[in-house]
Amino acid sequence: MSATPHTMHGPSARLAPFGESIFTTMSRLAVEHKAVNLGQGFPDFDGPDFVKQAAQRAIAEGHGQYARAFGLPETNRAIAAAAQRTCGFEADPEREVTVTAGCTEAIAACLLGLLSPGDEVVLLDPSYDSYAACVAMAGGVARRVRLEGPDFRITRATLAPAFSSRTKAILLNSPHNPSGRMFDDAEYAIVAELADQHDAIILSDEVYDAITYARPHRSIAQIPGVRERAVILGSLGKTFSLTGWKIGWAIAPPAITAGIRCAHQFLTFCAATPLQRAAADALSSVCRDDSYLKQLHSEYTARRNRMLDILNEAGFRCVEPEGSYFILVDAVEAGFPDDVTAARRLVVEAGVAAIPSSHFYDPAHPDHRWLRFAFCKRESTMLEARRRLLANPPRRLAERAV
Ligand code: GLN
Image (tube, rainbow, N blue to C red):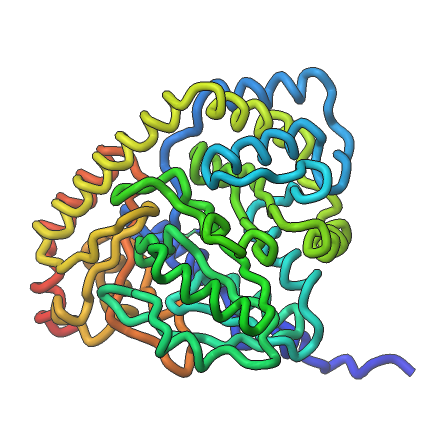
């Protein structure tokens, strides 16, 4: 007997609560309304020539077949060397490094490879949208802790109650998307102590490690005792302005790596071979000579200051980022009822797209205050956004009835 032809198909019960990603939605609205897109965080400028040329060479030389599942040997080596430079720890390239299709796949591989059904994962809201979705796909349970803006500080009082005998992992992100916070050692120590007490794995998404303003990046793995229970997640995309290449990695002790690799081999098997070769060149080159990273830092500092000026001039109260390429502004203080209304009215009426950050919260406890602007953009893009925001000042929009 065949299935009834009227069955409605759609997302699984696990994914049904998630729907379309807010980045996809806002980028679509930006195109529809010919808006300047300061929503989805991708640079509107290209990555460096030396990295693109390395990929072109790799393709021309014929590196067109699968790579070793956990990474080309030279890529694993370059990632380990880069981690030593940025995070100050030794990693065994063969036993502790896994190359993935972007950090998003690394997060998925960690959760699918390490969680058993019902295991709990602590998330710090606002948290990147893929975290809760991947916990759900892995059959885990997200325990979401809300960090209150504008400080977004981790405190023992808010974090401790989220841990229990069911806690398998905590997933954190520093520099933090969307707040721009860089957690300090006192906050890291709270995480480390609770993880230690509950024997939990610390998953640390550090993809914005090269984009910092307040001070140089520090990995939670630099806190004594953390490295043996930590997975350090990174990627090429932000540092080299090549988000579409989707080259990421996970660095973890061998036992944890075994779980990650097991999931990774069944998810993508391996990341794109020629791009892995180019990634190896890119990472080795910045280990030899940091002039590219210095230039990246000075360019992003200028972009950050420019965007803060523009948003202040437009009348927004901003959260000054310590790292990352995002700025949160207070939509409610600007007169909007919430961030979603602000984002909709700005994209339609002012022609500027931003991300309503309530999508980064537990749907049961969202904070509707924060609107996120991305400034990984050319000067001309930011100036066009300025022109539009000054022509339609947000406060005036908020006062005007729809
Ligand atoms: N990381 C990017 C951001 O936060 C978006 C990536 C995506 O579109 N999934 O804007």
